[in-house]
Image 1 (cartoon, one colour):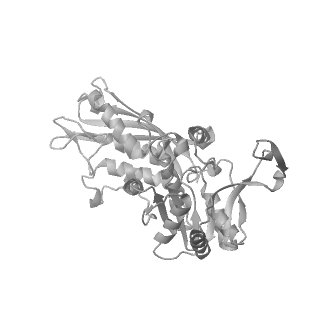
Image 2 (cartoon, rainbow, N blue to C red; image 1 turned 90 degrees about the vertical axis):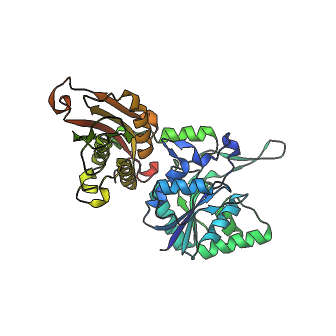
Image 3 (cartoon, rainbow, N blue to C red; image 1 turned 45 degrees about the vertical axis):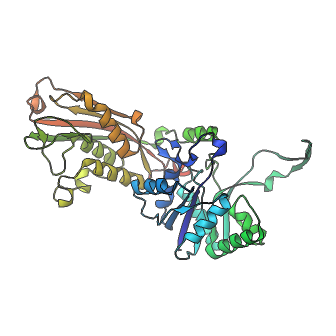
Length: 399
């Protein structure tokens, strides 16, 4: 199938209670939008990915996509005043017509890849499909005075979610006809229903919540809290000789000193140990496998770039770095003044909150190679959690 995904992210977030767009709100170290885009980036069915931004926020969305190396994002579309206008703008921004288009709201950050694939398959088979969950509460209809008018049979009532998937030609025609007739709907499926086209219901996910108010964000954070079954611990160790004529780079910080660390790259012993720990926790080998010292591309390369790539490698497996603890072993120089800057760099590279990054320094009281100032070493321990590609529907299954 030729499948394109549109991610409306142009909401005004009036009920969210903050000036900025809620899709940039932090959810365990990542913006809501970044989590959603990662799921679709890692879904093999999706060939093209287009986020739809609020006017004026296109550059911010594009920068977010570039920072995370989202190769399937072909462009950032500009949204309209209503969600319906935004989706139409996304449809019209496609340079070539896909067979299937799937729509998913950026405000639903806990969608699973499995749900996306089920919905796309149903859209391919039936022409139109939506994820939905059976309502569990008794639904009553009220009159204008606020009294119960009717009680409905909940056995056939569903709460609609996204993703929704459609044959591209059907959805584009439905949107254009709605625009011509001045018809408004709160979801894309309703536009097909209006024209008499059947819409298949795909079993949704109770955890696929929509973040509308701050309490929803708190719920999403709680759903992502790792259980023991979803965690892995990685340990990394690295050592480099001290030599003259080299800069001393630790944790992405150039530390003033008359000696530097020898190595093929910038020999950042802190980031190398952390990268090994992250790769080890994900069972992805070590930095020597991914960035061999025989490759001239990595000659004098900044280890910050390597760290960003390591974060991308583990994210592609549906894994997130939860926290990092590193211990530098060096007799000199004094590192305390540089620790906070190191923590900030590491947090940025791995996409975690700086509060979840610890860097410590210790000496060996003059013992061993570090005590003789012949080199430096670093131990790192990390915790990674499994997300199955971004959604709790797969949270407890390791890739």
